Image (cartoon, rainbow, N blue to C red):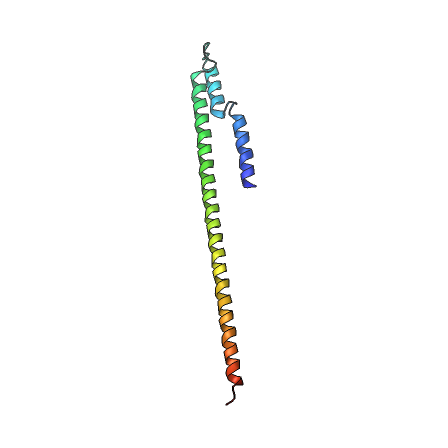
Length: 119
């Protein structure tokens, strides 16, 4: 479920990549306020700097998400390994109990045989 929510958030983030981020929008306003209008390029210098800042923030968010996913994967691996070890120990304990039960039954039979011997 947690991964499904993350995938949905990532899909939303990806859909926003084509949109101007907050830094780019602020840069666009700063360029307009400064009267900067580039006829060749559709964005001014402040807008381009803002776009770069937005891209850097998105990249940092992606890196944090990847790091969190790696930590979750490691946690899952630790739990799986612990479960496997616990299962193996339970099987070993069952084997020891069966062996002890058989040995106990054998000794009980010997005790019964000793009691039945005529003196």
